[in-house]
Length: 216
Image (cartoon, rainbow, N blue to C red; front, side, top):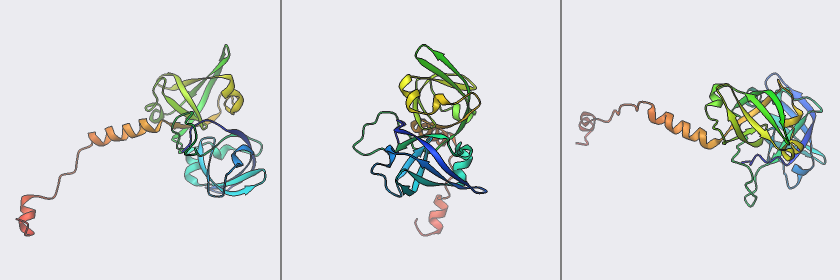
C-alpha cells in the first residue's frame, strides 16, 4: 500500500520491451534506502516488484496487464518518473490509500496557472469518472491529489508549488497520458451496490430435495 506522497523523481535508465511484456531500470537514491529485492515500489503510480538492486537504482519486470492499464509502455530512456516506497507500518499517512493498481489512463487536456497554483484538467473514460467525487481523492501518476472540479468528460486538480516541484506532473503537456487510480473506498462501495442490485440465484435446496435425500 502507498500514500501518494512522492518521495523522489527517478530517471529511466533502461527499457527492455518484448512483444507483450518488458523490464524497466530506474536510477534513484531515496527509494533505495532499506529496499530489498522483492519489495514494492510505486513507479508513476504502478506497484512494481524490485527484481534487481544496484548502487544507483533498481530494475523491475513489467507484465502485459500493466502495459495495458498504464502509461509505462510509453516510457523511454531519460524519462522522469514519480517514485514511492510502500508505506511502513509506523509511517505517517500523508495522502490517501493508494494500492498501486491502475484503473486506467487519462489525457491531460490543459494546464492553466492561477496565482501560485496550476490547474491541470484531465480527460478520462466514464468508468473512471463515475468513481470521482468533487473534493475527493485521486492518484495521478501515483500522486495523491484532491479533485477540485468535475464534469461529464473530465476532472481538474489544483497543483501547489511544492507538489509541482517534487513530482513530474507540471513537466507534462496537453496530450500527455497519465495513470489514474480511483479512491479504493469508492470502488468497494460501487461493487457492493452492484452486487445488491443483481438478482440472487434461486436455491436448489427445496423440501422435495431434502426428502429425497433422507433429511426429512
